[in-house]
Length: 286
Image (cartoon, rainbow, N blue to C red; front, side, top):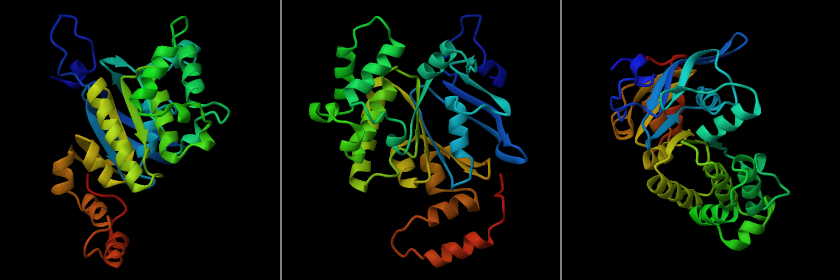
């Protein structure tokens, strides 16, 4: 099947089960003379989980912002379930985008209203997206889904722990039942034990709902535990892609191997890693 066929609706009634839910083709983003994302192409099946990894400045977060609609691409296409990603500026277009893709950021304090507890925040979101429908049952369902207790549900964000705040952010993102959830370094600021709790929670939610995940992270441990496939980015390019197990156990590029060698572990030598990094070329082989 050609890329064109993948990105278009079938008019002859043929089965579309093999069509990716998210299809990104030749995506590029320039800021003046600087190219942040350059000819990026990948796809994610419905219910799949893709990790996008790379160091700071690799272009992974810019890619995520374009997919969520926070930035516009310079060129390239994004289709969701065979339909072009809506790009209009009116309220109807914004709401439609929100129902397609939601994002959870590293620091929920930057996105949560400091004046609202979790229950109030969810009520506000549902009132905007689902006017005229009963909200209390859905709020209770969401709080239960992210395992947030009743006391925490009434507290304002600054009275909550980091893990509790991230549960609120996840619940709010899930409120509109998006097809895709982008997690941009969503557990990077949490203690290791709390990271494990949130990652287990996300795995449960994916199993229960069939939602599709896009993990943006520099943490290869996160990628290994929660993704099916992974792409490695460097300086705006994809330098390697494949199943998570294959890429992390048998990397095919020096840059991916360098990322793996940079993870602390037994016999880890940070000086050797720094020396290899300093000697590496400006751009890895594609």
